[in-house]
Image 1 (cartoon, rainbow, N blue to C red):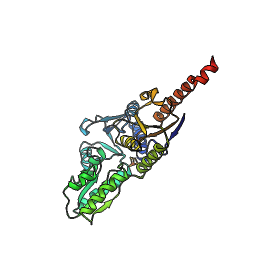
Image 2: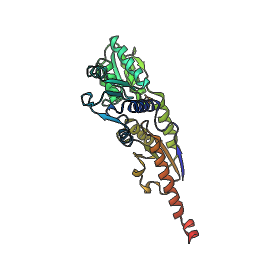
Image 3: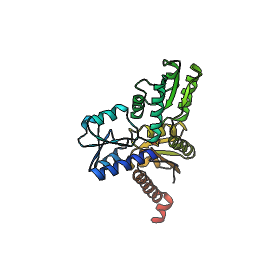
Image 4: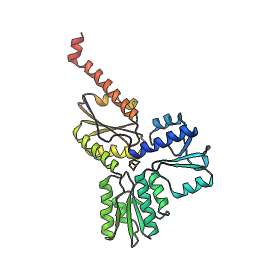
Length: 292
Ligand code: F3S
């Protein structure tokens, strides 16, 4: 069995940076709180909790003095609420997300109606809406783009992890409805690179494994992109999720991982696959005869 790991699998720059900030803060202050899990990976969240990196749902639940803003970013109201509560904020908003927030603010100030292409309930999108002074509308598909109310001046922004083709489909619909549309393609290039590498690898292998939190939107998207190539795809969180039968008779396996999947989980999955492979090889009739 041949195992190939896709390029750009695993932690992206923004997640690495947020983890580094959190680890430094926890080492300095004893503990630090994020609003929501620091990353969408339950195994890593559990590991971080042992190092003083905890999470709460709401700013009012923070027991300590230090709050870390996740790479997804937050609305301006969270910054004001933190300062009212005298909390020290460590801002780990990814610079690519900050860029999208900046366009939302700019467009709102200039009186544009704003369309965000993304997942309505994703924390990053909720944060960007805040920066638009809560005026932005979210569309998740080209069909929705055909229906939403548009003003005279319209600007469009993307959630950083949107697939490029979904964004372009929405832009086409909006441009037909408003030829003066201002387009800000705020898709993060690492996302596009990871998605392209996953699709390219999926086309070459018999089975794809996408590793990452089942609650991670970008990992789910990778799994969808891989399935769309027609290749059987399994979305797993960790090595113990792998069913041996999935690899029976398989020659070429591809692996990719979401932006919030730590290297140690990818390595455990690789290790398990190699063990399964060794076991299978020992069980082939040829080898069984030799050992008799
Ligand atoms: Fe930032 Fe892109 Fe990661 S927006 S958080 S580097 S996926």
